[in-house]
Image (tube, rainbow, N blue to C red; front, side, top):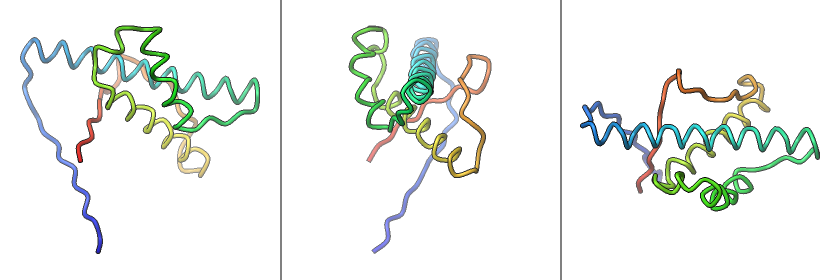
Length: 116
C-alpha cells in the first residue's frame, strides 16, 4: 500500500501580533540555519569531521540555553531548518547544487511546520 503525501500552501493576512511572532520565528530559523552551516563547515575544515542532521539537532538544547530567545518559538521550524540544511548538503555532494550559503534577512523568509 502506498502512502500519499500532501502539502498545503495558504495565503493569509496576519494581525500585528501574528506578524511579530512570524518575524521572530523567521529570525530564529535563519539563526539556527546559519549556525548549523557555520558549525558544519568549521568541523570539516578543522577536523575533517562530517556532521549529520542528528549531530546538529543534538546541539539545539545547548543553543536554547545559550540564546534564551530561541525558546520563545516552536522547536519544529528550528528542526526543519536543520533538515533543510542537511538536504542542501546532500544536493551539493550529489552535484545537483552549489555549496549552501548563509541566509540573510533581505531574501525570502520562511518557516516550515510539520504535522502528522
